[in-house]
Image 1 (tube, rainbow, N blue to C red):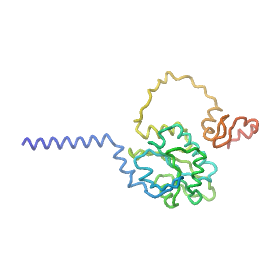
Image 2: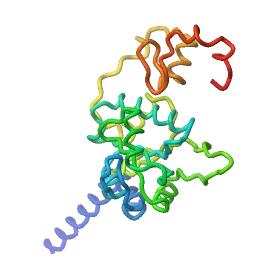
Image 3: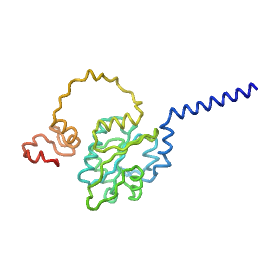
Image 4: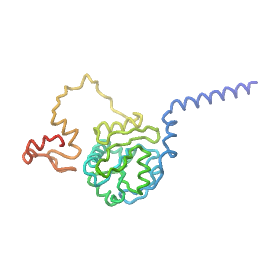
Length: 259
């Protein structure tokens, strides 16, 4: 009898422990929906000519940000890539260690590994940021699976939407953002939220200690809309240095709404 009761107690403890672990790790349970059974494991080629598999080598066990680009894009892609370059700098040495960026071309016929290597260098892509090409059918499959696919529009070849998928394969957390969002917001989302806020953090000061905000409209506009591609007095970035631009362009040109 004692042996039977002991067996029942141990079984009950084991059952409770299993339920507790499941409840304590909902993201891990959710991850079963967003693992190898969901992401295609097709072959891609990096800007350095290395062959990789999309799930096994790029997604599995990693925190990632994925976007779609093509190097002949005139507007959206350069801005999106420049914005990711800002996020890369904010994430610092976490890039290539526990955070990875993947920019996949949707024009593999033109964007060979060599073309992508030049493009990556232009935006100062560092460790952990891969530019990828492959077969068109495989790229279309990936873009549909990650929710970034948009049908080609011959009437508007530059109409690509700059969206960004960010996620953590281990925890099963995935979300889509604008690829041209505020870089600090994107860095915080990728670096902290996707890791369930488990990274060591410095103690934050009280809002009561915050100094009054003096908002300069020009400075705010530059930081949020121009700084990804331009500097003022620090040399060319993706675009030209804007120091002295008021001497070379009239006010009407500078204040045009399409600027």
